Image (cartoon, rainbow, N blue to C red; front, side, top):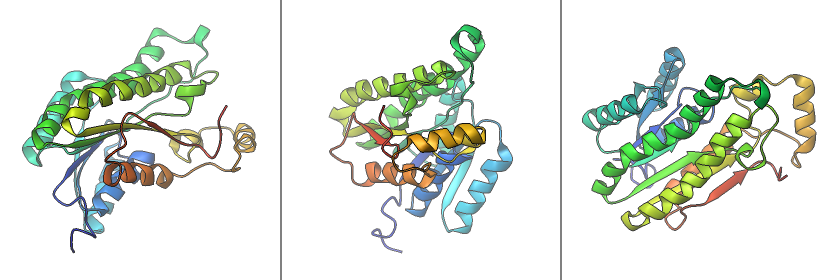
Length: 251
């Protein structure tokens, strides 16, 4: 297998929240291109082991790392472990995220804080921890998975929307800081994608959402992964941007 078939051979990628959905797809696709993938998960060990097995069965390489990205010390320990066991991280996919639906007047402080800690602070912790490694290597790619809701908001998801809006602003600031080191930082803003999160939506509400999407369907995790791969392989002059993958749903 030559480098044209495996353009990421010799590179290490960390995918947070890689046990399911968008993170799972990105991990599998990165491994298929030759990257050694560090798959982060928090709770679902069985699911992440299935991802690792799928990668292995397809000839790829991966290892799994348990860590709650909302905990700064845990993130530091995970990054150190990856460097020690695999090598410097060249690619970071900040994908880990949670949602806790509640209107603002009924939202507890914990329901607010938990979402911000995972979705926004986790991006900060992971990014800050890998930057020295990327500078050492002389280049790097950071791709943050944000959301359409970080731009338009949603009833019952103010905490989630705020966290993802913060990711968009963080992306631009970090891109400016790291450009001098040949490290690009970009965000992908998925619209409604078929994942575990959207499976929880009642059918009647799901039908209403589909009818509001110009392409009249939900997207797939592969749609997001394809863009992440493009940014990693082809996006050498793309940084600080947000790319919308939402079926035409601009509001």
